[in-house]
Amino acid sequence: MNKKGIFESLIYLDKDYISAKHEEISGFSPITSITKTEGLNAGVRIPLLSAGASSIESKTYAISTNAMLSNLIEDLSLIDEFSKFNHAIGQKSKIAWISGSLSVAKVKLSQTKQTYTLIGEPKKSDTPVTEHLAEERFFKINGTGNVNFALITSPDYFFSGIDSFQSLLGTVVHQVDIPVRALIRVFSSKSAFDEWIATPLVIIESDC
Image 1 (tube, rainbow, N blue to C red):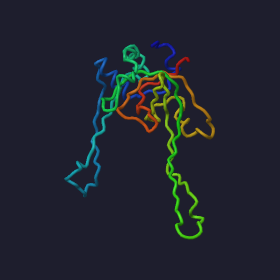
Image 2: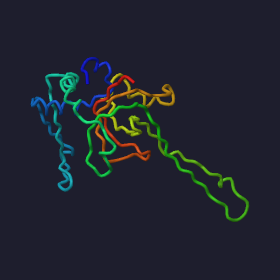
Image 3: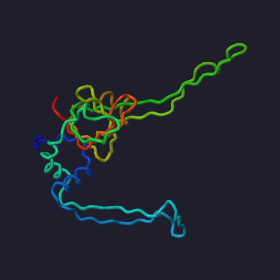
Image 4: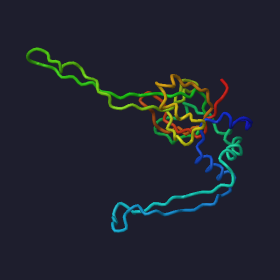
């Protein structure tokens, strides 16, 4: 994958993954501080099931995550393409490249209730009533070879406000169809629509 023009085409970058991968490959350890925070009031202690405190690790790097990606892109390019023949439910998650079209999907969950009058004339309440339970929007990639991926994304990792496409779908935004090249982590899980559940690590807009 060519470094030139990659940042103009960058859609999504998992900064935690890139920084950890850069640390692994370069062998350079950043300045790290660990802060312990109390999670309970001073006068209240629950000795069982809860330690009452947590630790937060902060790291300081000398270069940006964009520079890290530029340094890593040749190594990342060596990662295999996703193959539906080499991944199945029950297997360990897999990091792989895919090509396809990035879009936004919307799922509505509803249930229909109906009562029946067994004796006498039918009542108005016998008419079926559909109750809207929930609605969810999510990004997905329709990959080559009829393999699709439902993405679990973080708003902070998107570039150029692309994350707002989710909330604008159906009002301002009518259709999202972006050709992409993506490095994803595919889990041993599928959606109700036979899509692999995955978290994107790098998404780059590509030529068709």
